[in-house]
Image (cartoon, rainbow, N blue to C red; front, side):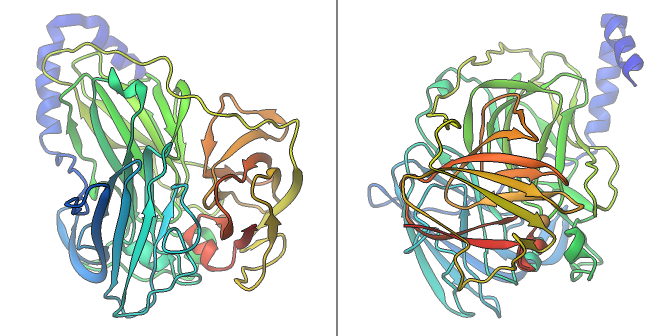
Length: 456
Ligand SMILES: [Cu+2]
Protein backbone atom coordinates (compact mmCIF):
# COMPACT_ATOMS: atom_id res chain seq x y z
CA UNK A 1 0.00 0.00 0.00
CA UNK A 2 2.78 2.36 0.99
CA UNK A 3 4.75 1.62 -2.17
CA UNK A 4 1.65 2.20 -4.31
CA UNK A 5 1.13 5.56 -2.62
CA UNK A 6 4.73 6.48 -3.15
CA UNK A 7 4.43 5.47 -6.80
CA UNK A 8 1.40 7.69 -7.32
CA UNK A 9 3.21 10.58 -5.70
CA UNK A 10 6.42 10.18 -7.70
CA UNK A 11 4.63 9.44 -10.97
CA UNK A 12 3.63 13.06 -10.88
CA UNK A 13 1.13 15.08 -12.84
CA UNK A 14 0.42 12.64 -15.65
CA UNK A 15 -1.35 10.23 -13.34
CA UNK A 16 -2.94 12.68 -10.95
CA UNK A 17 -5.91 13.86 -13.07
CA UNK A 18 -6.98 10.30 -13.97
CA UNK A 19 -6.55 8.89 -10.46
CA UNK A 20 -8.12 12.02 -9.01
CA UNK A 21 -11.23 11.55 -11.15
CA UNK A 22 -11.45 7.86 -10.32
CA UNK A 23 -11.08 8.57 -6.60
CA UNK A 24 -13.67 11.34 -6.73
CA UNK A 25 -16.09 8.98 -8.51
CA UNK A 26 -15.55 6.35 -5.79
CA UNK A 27 -16.03 8.97 -3.10
CA UNK A 28 -19.29 9.97 -4.83
CA UNK A 29 -20.86 6.72 -3.59
CA UNK A 30 -20.26 7.72 0.02
CA UNK A 31 -22.80 9.85 1.92
CA UNK A 32 -21.82 13.38 2.84
CA UNK A 33 -20.84 13.94 6.47
CA UNK A 34 -24.01 15.39 7.99
CA UNK A 35 -23.79 18.21 10.50
CA UNK A 36 -25.12 17.06 13.88
CA UNK A 37 -28.58 18.38 14.75
CA UNK A 38 -28.56 21.22 17.30
CA UNK A 39 -30.68 22.09 20.32
CA UNK A 40 -32.79 25.12 19.37
CA UNK A 41 -31.94 27.84 21.88
CA UNK A 42 -34.02 30.87 22.78
CA UNK A 43 -31.65 33.80 23.41
CA UNK A 44 -34.31 36.53 23.60
CA UNK A 45 -33.10 37.50 27.09
CA UNK A 46 -29.48 38.73 27.16
CA UNK A 47 -27.04 36.28 28.77
CA UNK A 48 -29.58 33.48 28.81
CA UNK A 49 -29.87 30.44 26.54
CA UNK A 50 -33.05 28.38 26.97
CA UNK A 51 -33.62 25.01 25.37
CA UNK A 52 -35.31 21.66 25.72
CA UNK A 53 -34.33 18.02 25.46
CA UNK A 54 -37.13 15.48 25.10
CA UNK A 55 -36.01 11.93 25.90
CA UNK A 56 -38.24 9.39 24.20
CA UNK A 57 -38.40 6.06 22.41
CA UNK A 58 -38.88 6.98 18.80
CA UNK A 59 -38.22 6.06 15.21
CA UNK A 60 -35.23 7.92 13.87
CA UNK A 61 -32.84 7.63 10.92
CA UNK A 62 -29.53 5.83 11.41
CA UNK A 63 -27.23 5.47 8.40
CA UNK A 64 -30.11 6.35 6.08
CA UNK A 65 -32.63 3.85 7.36
CA UNK A 66 -35.51 4.07 9.86
CA UNK A 67 -34.62 2.56 13.25
CA UNK A 68 -36.53 2.40 16.53
CA UNK A 69 -34.16 4.10 18.98
CA UNK A 70 -34.14 6.20 22.16
CA UNK A 71 -33.37 9.82 21.36
CA UNK A 72 -33.25 13.40 22.49
CA UNK A 73 -35.52 15.49 20.26
CA UNK A 74 -35.76 12.64 17.73
CA UNK A 75 -32.13 13.08 16.65
CA UNK A 76 -29.45 10.39 16.32
CA UNK A 77 -26.92 11.17 17.67
CA UNK A 78 -28.52 13.58 20.14
CA UNK A 79 -28.53 17.27 19.24
CA UNK A 80 -25.48 19.45 19.85
CA UNK A 81 -25.85 21.95 22.68
CA UNK A 82 -23.91 24.98 21.42
CA UNK A 83 -23.35 27.51 24.23
CA UNK A 84 -20.95 30.32 25.11
CA UNK A 85 -18.68 30.92 28.06
CA UNK A 86 -20.36 33.20 30.58
CA UNK A 87 -23.95 32.61 29.57
CA UNK A 88 -26.61 31.00 31.73
CA UNK A 89 -28.11 27.84 30.32
CA UNK A 90 -31.63 26.74 31.21
CA UNK A 91 -32.23 23.32 29.80
CA UNK A 92 -35.54 21.55 30.34
CA UNK A 93 -35.32 17.77 30.29
CA UNK A 94 -38.69 16.23 29.40
CA UNK A 95 -38.94 12.54 30.26
CA UNK A 96 -41.25 10.77 27.82
CA UNK A 97 -39.68 7.39 28.60
CA UNK A 98 -41.36 4.82 30.85
CA UNK A 99 -38.48 4.93 33.34
CA UNK A 100 -36.26 7.33 35.29
CA UNK A 101 -33.79 9.52 33.47
CA UNK A 102 -31.56 12.54 34.16
CA UNK A 103 -28.55 14.38 32.71
CA UNK A 104 -24.83 14.39 33.35
CA UNK A 105 -22.88 17.25 31.77
CA UNK A 106 -19.58 15.48 31.14
CA UNK A 107 -16.56 17.81 31.02
CA UNK A 108 -18.12 21.06 32.19
CA UNK A 109 -16.62 22.58 35.36
CA UNK A 110 -20.01 23.31 36.91
CA UNK A 111 -21.33 22.53 40.40
CA UNK A 112 -22.08 18.84 41.03
CA UNK A 113 -25.29 19.79 42.88
CA UNK A 114 -28.34 22.04 42.69
CA UNK A 115 -29.79 22.25 39.19
CA UNK A 116 -26.38 21.93 37.53
CA UNK A 117 -24.39 18.68 37.04
CA UNK A 118 -26.38 16.94 39.74
CA UNK A 119 -26.46 13.25 38.90
CA UNK A 120 -28.44 12.54 42.10
CA UNK A 121 -31.52 14.10 40.48
CA UNK A 122 -33.89 11.51 39.03
CA UNK A 123 -36.68 12.63 36.73
CA UNK A 124 -39.66 10.22 36.88
CA UNK A 125 -41.44 9.02 33.74
CA UNK A 126 -43.79 11.65 32.35
CA UNK A 127 -42.17 14.51 34.30
CA UNK A 128 -39.64 17.17 33.47
CA UNK A 129 -36.82 19.02 35.18
CA UNK A 130 -35.20 22.37 34.50
CA UNK A 131 -31.40 22.26 34.65
CA UNK A 132 -29.66 25.60 35.08
CA UNK A 133 -26.00 26.57 35.19
CA UNK A 134 -23.54 29.25 34.13
CA UNK A 135 -20.98 28.12 31.54
CA UNK A 136 -17.64 28.99 33.20
CA UNK A 137 -14.76 30.79 31.53
CA UNK A 138 -12.05 28.35 30.48
CA UNK A 139 -14.57 25.73 29.40
CA UNK A 140 -14.38 26.44 25.66
CA UNK A 141 -14.17 23.08 23.91
CA UNK A 142 -16.09 19.89 23.25
CA UNK A 143 -18.01 18.18 26.04
CA UNK A 144 -21.14 16.02 26.14
CA UNK A 145 -24.26 14.92 27.98
CA UNK A 146 -25.98 11.61 28.68
CA UNK A 147 -28.17 10.05 31.39
CA UNK A 148 -26.62 8.87 34.67
CA UNK A 149 -29.18 6.67 36.43
CA UNK A 150 -27.20 4.10 38.36
CA UNK A 151 -27.81 0.57 37.08
CA UNK A 152 -29.89 1.66 34.09
CA UNK A 153 -27.75 3.88 31.88
CA UNK A 154 -26.03 1.57 29.39
CA UNK A 155 -29.08 0.41 27.36
CA UNK A 156 -30.39 3.96 26.90
CA UNK A 157 -26.97 5.29 25.93
CA UNK A 158 -26.42 2.48 23.47
CA UNK A 159 -29.81 3.18 21.84
CA UNK A 160 -29.02 6.86 21.37
CA UNK A 161 -29.20 8.98 24.54
CA UNK A 162 -25.96 10.90 24.04
CA UNK A 163 -25.26 14.38 22.69
CA UNK A 164 -22.32 16.75 22.29
CA UNK A 165 -21.87 20.11 24.00
CA UNK A 166 -19.76 22.71 22.22
CA UNK A 167 -18.67 25.65 24.36
CA UNK A 168 -17.56 28.68 22.36
CA UNK A 169 -15.13 31.06 24.02
CA UNK A 170 -12.49 33.63 23.35
CA UNK A 171 -9.43 31.61 22.44
CA UNK A 172 -6.55 33.66 21.06
CA UNK A 173 -5.23 30.88 18.85
CA UNK A 174 -8.58 30.67 17.05
CA UNK A 175 -8.21 34.20 15.71
CA UNK A 176 -5.76 33.24 12.98
CA UNK A 177 -7.11 29.74 12.44
CA UNK A 178 -8.54 29.50 8.93
CA UNK A 179 -10.16 26.07 8.79
CA UNK A 180 -13.21 23.96 8.15
CA UNK A 181 -14.55 23.20 11.64
CA UNK A 182 -16.66 20.05 12.24
CA UNK A 183 -18.05 18.24 15.26
CA UNK A 184 -17.78 14.47 14.68
CA UNK A 185 -19.70 12.19 17.04
CA UNK A 186 -18.28 8.67 16.98
CA UNK A 187 -20.83 6.09 17.98
CA UNK A 188 -21.32 2.41 17.25
CA UNK A 189 -24.62 0.57 17.08
CA UNK A 190 -26.08 -2.77 16.06
CA UNK A 191 -29.29 -2.72 14.05
CA UNK A 192 -31.39 -5.80 13.28
CA UNK A 193 -34.24 -5.03 10.89
CA UNK A 194 -35.33 -1.67 12.23
CA UNK A 195 -34.54 -2.24 15.91
CA UNK A 196 -31.53 -2.13 18.21
CA UNK A 197 -31.43 -5.48 20.04
CA UNK A 198 -31.13 -5.74 23.82
CA UNK A 199 -27.80 -6.21 25.57
CA UNK A 200 -26.53 -9.77 25.37
CA UNK A 201 -25.54 -11.02 28.87
CA UNK A 202 -21.87 -11.12 27.79
CA UNK A 203 -21.98 -7.45 26.88
CA UNK A 204 -22.13 -6.48 30.54
CA UNK A 205 -18.68 -7.86 31.31
CA UNK A 206 -16.94 -7.03 28.02
CA UNK A 207 -18.68 -3.70 27.43
CA UNK A 208 -21.07 -3.48 24.49
CA UNK A 209 -19.75 -2.68 21.04
CA UNK A 210 -21.96 -2.21 17.97
CA UNK A 211 -21.37 -3.49 14.43
CA UNK A 212 -21.74 -0.15 12.65
CA UNK A 213 -19.05 2.50 13.08
CA UNK A 214 -20.90 5.78 12.69
CA UNK A 215 -19.70 9.34 12.31
CA UNK A 216 -22.62 11.69 12.97
CA UNK A 217 -25.01 8.79 12.45
CA UNK A 218 -23.72 7.51 9.09
CA UNK A 219 -21.14 4.96 7.99
CA UNK A 220 -18.02 6.13 6.16
CA UNK A 221 -19.15 9.62 5.17
CA UNK A 222 -17.15 12.07 3.07
CA UNK A 223 -16.34 15.61 4.10
CA UNK A 224 -15.90 17.90 1.09
CA UNK A 225 -13.56 20.36 2.76
CA UNK A 226 -14.00 24.03 2.01
CA UNK A 227 -10.52 24.78 3.36
CA UNK A 228 -7.15 23.05 3.13
CA UNK A 229 -7.07 22.88 6.94
CA UNK A 230 -9.79 20.90 8.71
CA UNK A 231 -10.46 20.98 12.45
CA UNK A 232 -12.19 17.78 13.54
CA UNK A 233 -13.70 17.77 17.00
CA UNK A 234 -14.22 14.12 17.92
CA UNK A 235 -16.45 12.83 20.70
CA UNK A 236 -16.47 9.11 21.49
CA UNK A 237 -20.09 8.63 22.54
CA UNK A 238 -19.85 4.83 22.43
CA UNK A 239 -20.65 2.63 25.41
CA UNK A 240 -17.43 0.62 25.19
CA UNK A 241 -15.69 0.95 21.82
CA UNK A 242 -12.18 2.40 21.78
CA UNK A 243 -11.67 4.54 18.67
CA UNK A 244 -8.01 4.85 17.74
CA UNK A 245 -7.67 7.09 14.69
CA UNK A 246 -4.98 7.90 12.18
CA UNK A 247 -4.57 9.41 8.73
CA UNK A 248 -4.42 7.01 5.77
CA UNK A 249 -1.54 8.87 4.11
CA UNK A 250 0.95 8.36 6.93
CA UNK A 251 0.94 12.04 7.93
CA UNK A 252 0.49 12.74 11.66
CA UNK A 253 -2.68 14.07 13.27
CA UNK A 254 -2.11 17.42 14.98
CA UNK A 255 -3.84 17.10 18.34
CA UNK A 256 -4.85 20.41 19.92
CA UNK A 257 -7.21 19.28 22.70
CA UNK A 258 -8.11 16.32 24.87
CA UNK A 259 -11.38 16.13 26.77
CA UNK A 260 -12.41 19.74 26.13
CA UNK A 261 -9.11 21.22 27.36
CA UNK A 262 -6.58 22.69 24.92
CA UNK A 263 -2.92 21.75 24.96
CA UNK A 264 -0.05 24.19 25.31
CA UNK A 265 0.97 23.49 21.72
CA UNK A 266 -0.22 21.14 18.96
CA UNK A 267 1.17 17.60 19.17
CA UNK A 268 1.89 15.63 16.00
CA UNK A 269 0.80 12.06 16.70
CA UNK A 270 0.77 9.00 14.43
CA UNK A 271 -2.59 8.11 15.96
CA UNK A 272 -4.93 9.38 18.62
CA UNK A 273 -6.88 7.19 21.04
CA UNK A 274 -10.39 8.01 22.19
CA UNK A 275 -11.70 5.77 24.95
CA UNK A 276 -15.45 5.90 25.68
CA UNK A 277 -16.35 9.40 26.88
CA UNK A 278 -13.15 11.00 25.55
CA UNK A 279 -12.93 13.93 23.17
CA UNK A 280 -10.02 14.97 20.97
CA UNK A 281 -9.64 17.88 18.60
CA UNK A 282 -7.27 17.41 15.69
CA UNK A 283 -6.09 19.57 12.82
CA UNK A 284 -5.82 17.84 9.45
CA UNK A 285 -3.79 19.64 6.80
CA UNK A 286 -4.78 18.66 3.25
CA UNK A 287 -1.71 19.53 1.21
CA UNK A 288 -2.39 17.39 -1.86
CA UNK A 289 -5.36 16.83 -4.14
CA UNK A 290 -6.01 13.18 -3.18
CA UNK A 291 -8.60 12.31 -0.56
CA UNK A 292 -7.35 11.46 2.93
CA UNK A 293 -9.14 8.88 5.04
CA UNK A 294 -9.44 8.94 8.79
CA UNK A 295 -8.93 5.30 9.69
CA UNK A 296 -10.14 3.32 12.66
CA UNK A 297 -7.54 1.05 14.25
CA UNK A 298 -8.41 -1.87 16.52
CA UNK A 299 -7.21 -1.79 20.12
CA UNK A 300 -6.07 -4.90 21.91
CA UNK A 301 -8.20 -4.50 24.99
CA UNK A 302 -9.50 -7.70 26.52
CA UNK A 303 -13.19 -8.38 26.14
CA UNK A 304 -13.40 -6.59 22.84
CA UNK A 305 -15.12 -7.94 19.78
CA UNK A 306 -12.60 -7.77 16.94
CA UNK A 307 -13.17 -5.00 14.44
CA UNK A 308 -10.76 -4.67 11.53
CA UNK A 309 -8.87 -1.54 10.61
CA UNK A 310 -11.09 0.51 8.30
CA UNK A 311 -11.70 4.01 6.97
CA UNK A 312 -14.48 5.83 8.86
CA UNK A 313 -14.36 9.27 7.24
CA UNK A 314 -12.98 10.54 3.94
CA UNK A 315 -11.70 14.10 3.62
CA UNK A 316 -11.84 15.51 0.10
CA UNK A 317 -9.47 18.49 -0.30
CA UNK A 318 -10.86 21.73 -1.75
CA UNK A 319 -10.48 22.11 -5.55
CA UNK A 320 -7.92 24.88 -5.14
CA UNK A 321 -5.15 24.61 -2.59
CA UNK A 322 -5.24 27.19 0.18
CA UNK A 323 -2.81 28.60 2.67
CA UNK A 324 -2.30 26.41 5.74
CA UNK A 325 -1.27 28.11 8.97
CA UNK A 326 -0.88 26.00 12.11
CA UNK A 327 -0.68 27.88 15.41
CA UNK A 328 2.40 27.00 17.47
CA UNK A 329 1.00 28.13 20.84
CA UNK A 330 -2.48 27.26 22.07
CA UNK A 331 -3.21 27.99 25.75
CA UNK A 332 -1.44 27.96 29.09
CA UNK A 333 -2.66 26.74 32.44
CA UNK A 334 -1.40 26.23 35.98
CA UNK A 335 0.27 22.87 35.84
CA UNK A 336 -0.17 20.41 38.69
CA UNK A 337 2.96 20.40 40.86
CA UNK A 338 3.55 16.76 41.74
CA UNK A 339 6.20 17.54 44.37
CA UNK A 340 3.75 19.24 46.72
CA UNK A 341 0.45 17.35 47.00
CA UNK A 342 -1.88 17.68 49.97
CA UNK A 343 -2.60 13.99 49.89
CA UNK A 344 -1.77 10.85 47.96
CA UNK A 345 -4.12 7.90 47.81
CA UNK A 346 -4.49 4.61 46.03
CA UNK A 347 -7.45 3.60 43.88
CA UNK A 348 -7.76 -0.02 42.79
CA UNK A 349 -9.73 -0.93 39.68
CA UNK A 350 -11.12 -4.41 39.24
CA UNK A 351 -14.09 -5.82 37.35
CA UNK A 352 -17.34 -4.10 38.46
CA UNK A 353 -15.71 -2.65 41.58
CA UNK A 354 -13.36 0.06 42.82
CA UNK A 355 -11.19 -0.74 45.85
CA UNK A 356 -13.13 -3.98 46.27
CA UNK A 357 -16.49 -2.24 46.72
CA UNK A 358 -19.51 -1.96 44.47
CA UNK A 359 -21.20 1.42 44.04
CA UNK A 360 -23.33 2.48 47.01
CA UNK A 361 -24.85 5.93 46.79
CA UNK A 362 -25.23 6.01 50.59
CA UNK A 363 -21.49 5.64 51.16
CA UNK A 364 -18.73 8.21 50.64
CA UNK A 365 -15.61 6.50 49.27
CA UNK A 366 -13.27 9.47 49.12
CA UNK A 367 -13.73 12.60 51.20
CA UNK A 368 -11.58 15.68 50.67
CA UNK A 369 -11.47 19.47 51.05
CA UNK A 370 -12.01 22.32 48.64
CA UNK A 371 -8.58 23.47 47.47
CA UNK A 372 -6.86 20.12 48.09
CA UNK A 373 -4.27 18.98 45.60
CA UNK A 374 -4.21 15.21 45.49
CA UNK A 375 -2.37 12.50 43.65
CA UNK A 376 -4.37 9.38 42.95
CA UNK A 377 -2.30 6.31 42.25
CA UNK A 378 -4.71 4.27 40.14
CA UNK A 379 -3.81 0.61 39.88
CA UNK A 380 -5.69 -1.50 37.41
CA UNK A 381 -5.39 -4.95 38.99
CA UNK A 382 -7.89 -6.45 36.55
CA UNK A 383 -7.19 -8.45 33.40
CA UNK A 384 -8.81 -5.86 31.12
CA UNK A 385 -8.47 -2.14 30.46
CA UNK A 386 -10.88 0.35 32.05
CA UNK A 387 -11.46 3.97 30.92
CA UNK A 388 -11.43 6.15 34.05
CA UNK A 389 -13.71 9.18 34.48
CA UNK A 390 -13.78 11.76 37.26
CA UNK A 391 -16.77 14.10 37.34
CA UNK A 392 -16.42 17.90 37.75
CA UNK A 393 -12.61 18.14 37.87
CA UNK A 394 -10.11 17.52 35.11
CA UNK A 395 -6.85 15.85 36.06
CA UNK A 396 -3.32 15.76 34.72
CA UNK A 397 -1.81 12.36 34.05
CA UNK A 398 1.59 12.56 35.76
CA UNK A 399 3.06 9.19 34.82
CA UNK A 400 2.20 5.63 33.85
CA UNK A 401 4.27 2.91 35.55
CA UNK A 402 6.69 5.66 36.56
CA UNK A 403 7.16 6.96 33.01
CA UNK A 404 6.16 10.57 32.41
CA UNK A 405 3.73 11.39 29.60
CA UNK A 406 5.12 12.63 26.27
CA UNK A 407 3.31 15.97 26.73
CA UNK A 408 1.21 17.76 29.34
CA UNK A 409 -2.55 17.44 29.02
CA UNK A 410 -5.67 17.68 31.11
CA UNK A 411 -8.13 14.81 30.94
CA UNK A 412 -11.44 13.69 32.32
CA UNK A 413 -10.99 10.29 30.63
CA UNK A 414 -7.91 8.10 30.55
CA UNK A 415 -7.34 4.48 29.62
CA UNK A 416 -6.12 2.54 32.63
CA UNK A 417 -4.51 -0.45 30.97
CA UNK A 418 -4.51 -3.85 32.62
CA UNK A 419 -1.69 -4.10 35.13
CA UNK A 420 -0.72 -0.43 34.87
CA UNK A 421 -0.26 2.05 37.70
CA UNK A 422 -1.21 5.53 36.58
CA UNK A 423 -0.70 8.61 38.76
CA UNK A 424 -3.06 11.52 38.21
CA UNK A 425 -2.91 14.96 39.82
CA UNK A 426 -6.18 16.66 40.76
CA UNK A 427 -6.69 20.16 42.14
CA UNK A 428 -10.13 20.33 43.76
CA UNK A 429 -10.92 23.94 42.94
CA UNK A 430 -14.15 25.92 42.71
CA UNK A 431 -16.79 23.38 43.67
CA UNK A 432 -17.91 21.42 46.69
CA UNK A 433 -20.43 18.62 46.80
CA UNK A 434 -20.92 14.95 46.23
CA UNK A 435 -20.20 13.36 42.88
CA UNK A 436 -18.64 10.30 41.24
CA UNK A 437 -15.62 8.67 39.71
CA UNK A 438 -16.08 5.54 37.65
CA UNK A 439 -15.24 3.28 34.76
CA UNK A 440 -16.77 4.72 31.57
CA UNK A 441 -17.72 1.44 30.02
CA UNK A 442 -21.40 2.24 30.55
CA UNK A 443 -21.99 -1.42 31.39
CA UNK A 444 -19.31 -1.52 34.09
CA UNK A 445 -20.57 1.68 35.70
CA UNK A 446 -24.09 0.22 35.80
CA UNK A 447 -22.80 -2.96 37.40
CA UNK A 448 -21.12 -1.08 40.25
CA UNK A 449 -17.71 0.10 39.01
CA UNK A 450 -18.34 3.54 40.39
CA UNK A 451 -17.66 5.34 43.67
CA UNK A 452 -18.65 8.48 45.55
CA UNK A 453 -16.42 11.51 46.09
CA UNK A 454 -17.33 14.21 48.57
CA UNK A 455 -15.56 17.57 48.50
CA UNK A 456 -16.35 19.81 51.45
CU1 LIG B 1 -14.54 -0.92 33.33
